[in-house]
Length: 471
Image 1 (cartoon, rainbow, N blue to C red):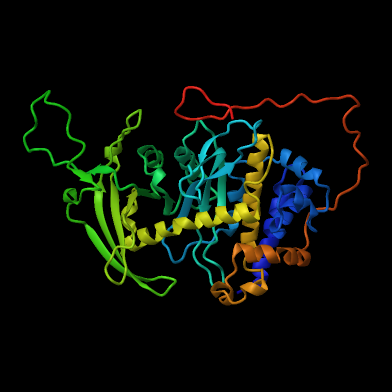
Image 2: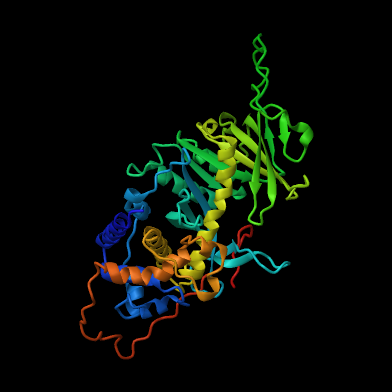
């Protein structure tokens, strides 16, 4: 491994960030270093106590207020460093949404009821706040690097009036249409969870010939086979519309399934050393109905349906329900069943990013009544994670005393947590292009007797009701 090359790339990436910040570049780069080097911070203002942040705490909020980034700002900066796939014949993009709980931000606009998983059974998995859609690049495994890494590319807040799946489709379209990125010119696979298996999401991405979309589908859906070919004799005029759909394919009714077009059996070993058998079946050129309004011509876009079941050593199914996947795209036949299975199992890597971002980078902890400032904070945290990814080959593993005998510590696999622990040392050795602050005297502050009007309280948007309720 060439440490000099990775060190040079990290320095160049940091200089690129510094040069492309329009305002307060010194404060923003120092704040990025503080986020990357202070894993014990409990609030955003505590980043001002980091050794790398040489300014007062008030400049954090001033820098965020003046931060101006376009949607493709981060992927454009990362374009020279994207790891080209060698083991897979395609680029792998993962998209999902995550909540930003703000139940007590009564003056924050456009809050709604968003999904949040609950540990305690019986509680409703909802909270009040915002939700953000994120698209990440899933790189291939590297020697000595934890497989939990992803490379964040885009993030955007999902408004209460927006469809989260269409927001994700728009983000993927932006990446595919960018000429400086390789996703639109080469085979790219986009993976999503079951909520994205709706016709509007698939239809929005059918304009890209090099994109293949894989999404999980619920086991209660009904699809259709290709219609029977028309008779040799033309039908009498005025006898009705030609058939678009053939026999029904009901996922919950095995009697409606024809013989699979392809099957595959794999053997896996779990972390506990147990042997698992994976049975994969595939049906090609199925159709779904376009029930959206306006009605979508989904009969023109066939897909491959994949069924996956995992069995233990005794032949018993490990899960109650099988895993159903939709594979749609013009180049879907270039993916093998092994590719499809391994690609969807990699979808969970984005959950590692959300967990690390919220626990160690305070992704959802910025308390502000300004929606725009909250969105800018999310963009800045994504940039900080990308900077940690750039430093992954330069960092050293520094486990705590009680972590030295853990399996992944013995293998010396550098995770985002380990890179964050060592980032302060890296910055002391490499230095920073940001300039130290220059004292400019004391601010006059507010005039005597000046009072600010209270912020108006905003209603919580509850979908499915005619009027929003106030919390």
